[in-house]
Image (tube, rainbow, N blue to C red):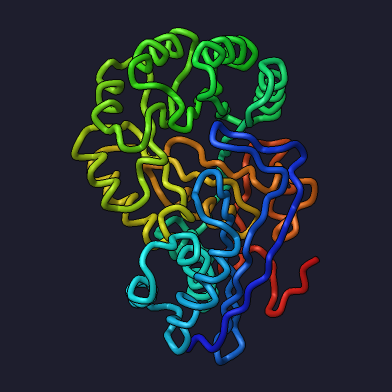
Length: 366
């Protein structure tokens, strides 16, 4: 089984409303779909979404990295040799985690397909899988808009609501208090500041958020301020999760060493794929930390990969963000997989071999 070729396709889907975080806003979810074909006619699919305001990477740069560097480095290799594939990609170009992640997902799709297994089984999970509880992510908006959306999706069955914040600490406290009153006590509540709080006032803000009913605060300080994050964690009252602070396994090791987090948010695309994500997850488990499998968000192929990984990790105790396909007008890659999620707050893992997206070789996409 050898890789013969790779093919790319840009896919766009319009957000139902612009998706806004403290570092920027997007009207469209744009992804690069990558198909890897073997000499014997098998295909695997991967995906990467360059949310430039968050990752700093552009669609043009992602396409060039796949086409000119990491894609050619894999031609002729056995797609099941994931360790060798990552060594080859790292030798071809430094960084470019999104490009490597897109191909990594395609290789896992191929490897699981060749074994006749759903991807969560290849990743170490149980044979039956099951529904994966999902976080609903509320993008920036007015307080009333965000509170109404949070209440609506909590009522639909989503067990965890994540609010985007970081622009105005006082408003964040007001928002959390309003949402806490509007959702059932059993619903976990987190707020993602996306590095938005100033170090001088962060401890006071986080204490007020805890008093307002917050369960988890995500990346309240800049990614480099691990000492500040450790100090916030020491204050207690609310768990601290890091996202931007973990771009690699080396970053995760430093977070653990410095005691800077209770939870690591592992975004598959951000760290270079499922292979690297599993390394980080193993490190967190060894250190006794919980993990969450995050998204940026992405469309169906990458979101399914996140669901499979979350199901395979016993310490993924914070529900993953599996909502990218639900944030757009029409999901173009794996719509069937998420058909029931809006009313249940869960994704039913596909049992088909591979990632379970249903795409076929040479898929024709609009």
